[in-house]
Image (cartoon, rainbow, N blue to C red; front, top):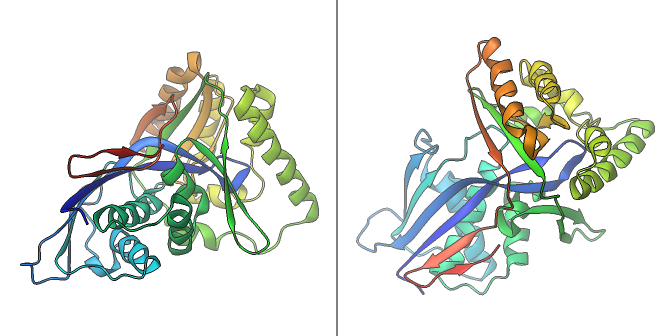
Length: 315
């Protein structure tokens, strides 16, 4: 058991158009958690929040960090130790479709594994985090990094496969100053879709994967034009059409919701990425919406754990 451990977990974008609930990509936004025990503390669990987490007021027992910590402990036949202190800071915007919930769950579980020396593989951590958080694509990106495809087998077992992304491609994000709650975004989805829509979705999902690997403009345009979830969720993100049109007009291959929104992500060639970023920000600004923008132009690794002075990296 370590006296203290520090964990860093990336945020992520998921779906990426036609990769609904199965494609996740780690992004360069992070949650950092320092975990330690202070047996003198009266509270069984104390969480100190900073950054994007500072506004959260929910009880520590309901925090996703602690739920991830407790889930990892129980998977190893343990209970969380008394006097647990989690110091958490994040620059992942909350309720914007950037994987903040998955990152928190993974951070808690990884902190437990590191602090208590739990013998849990990445595959086990991924399975328990998916069960708790519910989004396998975001969890996969947070644990394994890069771009990952998640498949659920007939028996419910998850399989994680890395996806190649062409080095010339840049993800461009525009994050507005309003959020979309995941529960609301899930509620607007239909329970069934026409067979023709399912066929179109399957073809566009294949186009997305091939387009990402080869920077194929036509396939990326098709793969980013989803039919399973975006048509039902776009109304939750005001001015969605204007921002997407701006990204395309500035030279992006296409744009879509990041996760369930409210952030919008475009895929662009490197030489057009700055122009796409400016166009997306300007489109929202013209509608009276403030938006943060950023670009991800390299592979981002998965979670990192540092117990005391000994570093271990998983990416």
